[in-house]
Amino acid sequence: MAAEADALHEVAAVRTRSFVLEGREITGKRMDMSRIDEVVHVGDTEIWEVHSSQPIPHSFHIHDVQFRILTVDGSAPPPQLAGPKDTVYLMPNVRYRLLVRFEDYTDPALPYMYHCHMLLHEDEGMMGQFVVIEPGQEDQVRVVETRSWRFGWCNGLEVSGRRAPEARPTGFPNLRDPPHGSVGS
Ligand SMILES: [Cu+2]
Image (cartoon, rainbow, N blue to C red; front, side):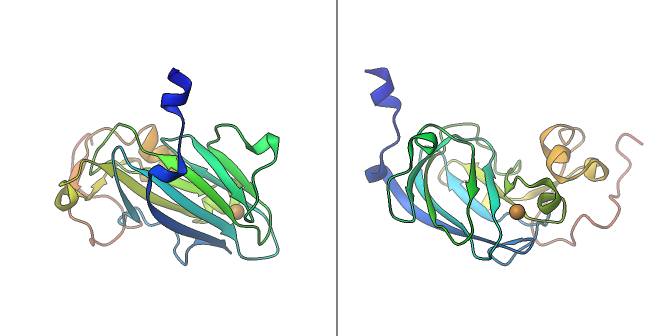
């Protein structure tokens, strides 16, 4: 059956990543457009463990993929959390294990986001970047400078960040400095 062939299976997971949401940080980091936080291989299934480590909820959203919630504090998810998701509401101090498969759309220089979907939190930096690459493209992972920083992080890269990209290696000063270069100006 096609549905069965498409299904996500925990036994297929090749690694586990952990994301802790606290304050306006994810695993101790705020969003930085000059940093790629996670590098994923296309075709891989992974387990992403996420939780809010403080007495308030967060909401974890992953671009590019739909995932399945494997467990909620070790138990099977309730029916309303059993289907395909792209966002999971994180009750305080409850651990969610997500099964995620990265199937396509590789680019070592065009990252996807994961972020808290409480938009104030997101706007204050509760976001990270990942790229999906072909195995062997690790040395091509880099950030791309765009002129769209003024439109905001998320929309900047997703919607309007495609024009006039200028590749540069990771580790440069971050994009809070005004972009330079004359393309389009
Ligand atoms: Cu949040």
